[in-house]
Amino acid sequence: MKNASLVLGCTALLGIAGLTAATPAHACRHSCNVSGDYVRWADHQSVQGARLAITTEDGKVTLLLTDRDVAVQLSDRTLHRVRREMHDKDEEEDNFLASVIKTVVIGTVDEVIDHSFACPVRKLRDVSYENGRLVLTDKNGHHVFEDTDIDDTDVLASFSEKDARNFVREFRRLKSESY
Image (cartoon, rainbow, N blue to C red):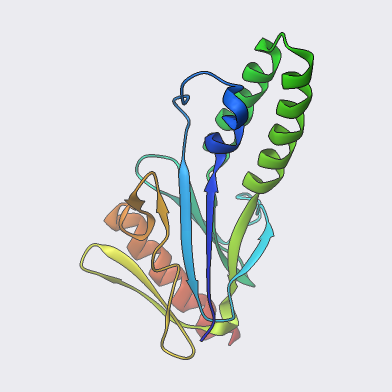
């Protein structure tokens, strides 16, 4: 089993060399421990093109089900807010060198946050709702997206029970139709 970890400290990048003020309200720490070979870094998915999309109760993260993938990504609302706040910060800088560095960092952060973690539906055995959280199990019996946290909040436990159960139902419907 392959393990990979990714931590995106969006505001930590913006804080290089003290170029920005205190951590803004949108600051997020996104960590995802990925077990198995099936989860990949992918483009941000369209909610409109998804078979089903549910968003955490705090509105920060969306879990999508398409005909091909299950994906975890920042919600469109969060993505727009972060971009707006980064743009506003970029316009505040008076120092030329700091402005150039910040422009490069903001471009990099923007590229990173505009992605998702995706796992092919065909590589998943099941999705269930147990003890107040979604559990995604791959074909080898390993849990997928198990340790996904945003602002130290367990993403898979952050959906309403109704949304989570709808996700399970739709995933199982898709699997029975296609796989």
